[in-house]
Image 1 (cartoon, one colour):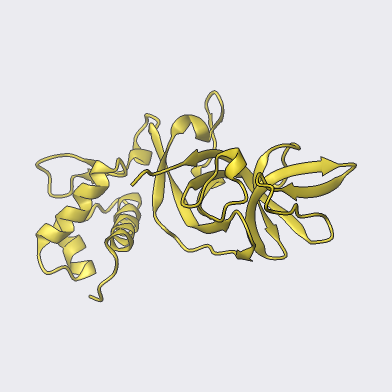
Image 2 (cartoon, rainbow, N blue to C red; image 1 turned 90 degrees about the horizontal axis):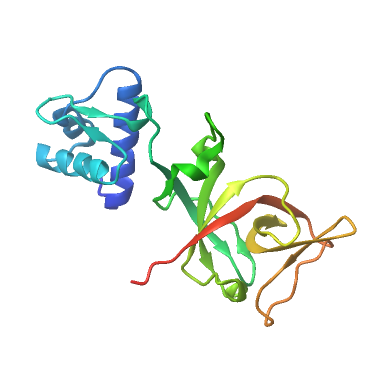
Length: 211
């Protein structure tokens, strides 16, 4: 097989295993090895065990087809995995990207609308921040913002929006029905309604890695 980054390969392994499990045909380690062309079953097992460690699969030890999905259990999963869909500009606008850049964990409480009513985790996505226009709001280059998809938001909310097909994270301001996107850094100018603005969602959390 052609060499791909470990994270990309693991995502492919997960989607393969998930499809087989949902179809009622749990794969073995050797099935995974054969489909992906791994030289040894140990490589297949490595990826499967990493998915277990990440909380995305469950393992029933001692069984050849012992992997299960949390979503197939009757109990709610404590974690959802939110896709990181590339980068969003917090500064000078650049063309929006939506390439899968891994996943970040999210407590299940963020995916609930109410008691017994679970919000589909597809309502959430994440983006990695570039630029410094939102530093006053504590959002810095390299941070990951987690976004809830929604077409509207209250004035004063930090949002991700498309501006002429370019993505940005800014603070939403509504004045007499007019939409404005404001930075949190005096070195940057606000984006006013002389441009086409489409709201993608509300920023509900910011993640930062110190290394």
